[in-house]
Image 1 (cartoon, rainbow, N blue to C red):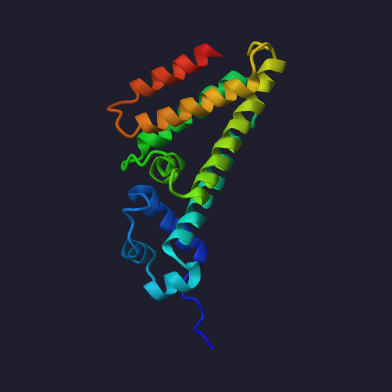
Image 2 (tube, rainbow, N blue to C red):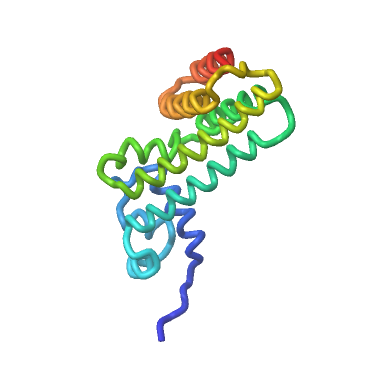
Amino acid sequence: MGRPKQFDPDVAVERAMGVFWRKGYAATTPQDLVDEIGIGKGSLYNTFGSKHALFERALARYRDSQVAWLEALLDHPGSAKDRLRGALEALVRLDLDDPDRRGCMAVNTAAELATSDAGTADTVRRMFARTESAFRVTVEEGQRAGEIAGDRDAAAVAAWLLATVIGMRVLAKTAEDAGQLRRVVDAAMASL
C-alpha cells in the first residue's frame, strides 16, 4: 500500500503555475518545480506524470482564472464603454503592478510554444476565443444601448480588442511607465 499524498495537488498546480509564468516552459526545470512545490521528484512525477502534463494543468488553471476575472469585470451594470475601459485599465494595472513583469502567461506561451506544441496552442486558442467572446457580448450590449455604432461588426471589434490586449500585455513587460499603455487604452476607446 502506497503512502498517502502529503501535499495538495491543487496547491501544487497553483505554485507550478507561478514558476512557469515567471520562467517560461523551457527554462523551468523539474528541480525548480519541486523546490517551489516542496515535494520530491518522485511525487511530482507520480502525481502529474511529467513536467509537460503539470504545465498543461497550470496553463488551463491560468486560462480559467483569467477569463473568469475578465468576464466578471465586463459583467456588471453600467455602460458598455465604461466596462470595456475598466477592463483594459485593470489589465494595465495588473501588468504594471507585477514586480516581475510576467505579462500574460497565455501570450508568453503562444510566443514560446505555439508552433511546436499543438496541445498548449489549443489551450491558448481557447483562452483567446473566450476573451474575444466576452468582448463581443459587451460590444453587442453597447450597440443595443446606442453607445457603439450598430453598423460595426461586433465580432471584428471584439477580435480587434483581443489583439489590442495582447499587444498591451507584451508592451507592459518593458514599459517604463503607465503612460504608454494608457494612451493605447485611450486610443482603443476613441475608436469605438
